[in-house]
Length: 332
Image 1: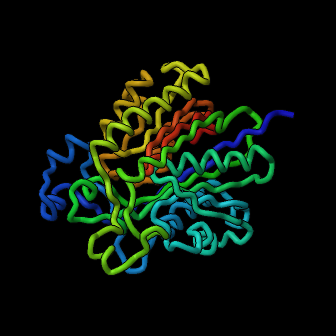
Image 2: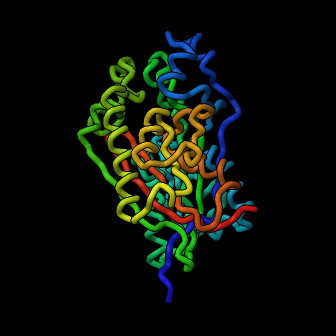
Image 3: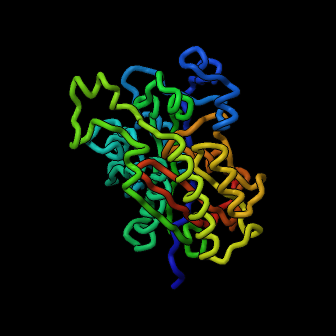
């Protein structure tokens, strides 16, 4: 019997309609389009507007589109792994909220929190359920409403983040296609440089923490940048070396869309040319867990069965990692 791999059989994405441009940010904080573009590569980002709308609402759009493309019913989904830093609630899990909203009555699920690396952590985890034979249809969702935790008076963070959601369906494959390998890493000492200061059990919400704006994302840019450039690039190169891949063997690099300079550094470390790098940061900014699946969604028509694809990410706290997969289908 052939070895079972976990293959992506469908992808989809959703971004809100509202476009927050650099020009609009210039009217909110002391910044400029030139400053933002030169340092991050971002021109605009999407923002979810509307009373009572959360991360799960974007996921509903993304997942329903995926189900339609794949031609399956939500009741066929067995497991939902929802990778998010901005869950609808502290509890219940957003995976469970999503399952209810889409009618996935036969699925169990949970949220996975690994900041911007969440989707590749979730993809690797979901693959294990497929490879073991326990499940045949696993939905991995990566989405965030980052605007809900961004201080729009803080120019170090508000220029970077946007809202969006993407998803991928994992199913068994016996042709050798799908997830081949993953390298996942964490370093909790990074919590002081990129994270949220209050709102958890260590420092529950009080009037003081709210007044001090400690429920917003906090980032010490230079430290994070240096750590991200080194580790995201190194782990992508490491997974290539471990699987005897050359730059010519790699069809696509799908990097987390944190910063154009970090993306360039990763591609350079791998020896991959820019025409093989998926980049949409200029239009969406950093959607945290949404960046990689949104790239796969936008590039889906250009992917070919058997393509070697490297995913790489870096996130707060710190988390980082890489996944090597072989694309499992042609779209044309």
